[in-house]
Length: 245
Image (cartoon, rainbow, N blue to C red; front, side, top):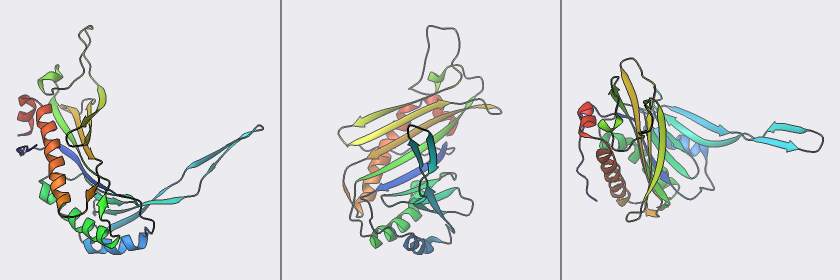
């Protein structure tokens, strides 16, 4: 599917995320990740270790005791100075997310290509078992909005009652059998903020096919991005597009 990309001058993207999935790296080394991260230190100088810790419940006949499990390293995070952009590198996933104002695809992926290239070359990742793109959009609807159908083509509606639905959230999955994409779409109408109604439109497109780690992977990401753009542009009305042009 070839989707013509439409550029909106006031793009509503508040979160953009890209992810690579691969088989578990058995010799995953946090110090090596930190060394690789030195190559992008000027842009992403902060390095954190992320840990997870479970809870152990011992339920015997006399009493129930609760204790903390061993603290384990979950991932390494490499962040920008303001912490609005960061990589999260685990032993089976490589993720980048940005909360900065979105400009364009090339700017968004510039350092991803550099860091992923260094990381995947070191660990000799020849194949991924999945890649994904997620974009969370926030529309600022007028406070006077009474009918969501004026802006969105998927919505909640109650024709049996006289009340107006003022807050809601829902999520649904769709599977693209032709391309093998799992699509997760979320909608949420939030409480009014100042002079507008926040409306969240969340699109996550996931390919779980095996993909060779070569230059073609970026062509595959472009296909996923085309799918995301198709969903976005067909999910909003002309009135919604006027808000972000």
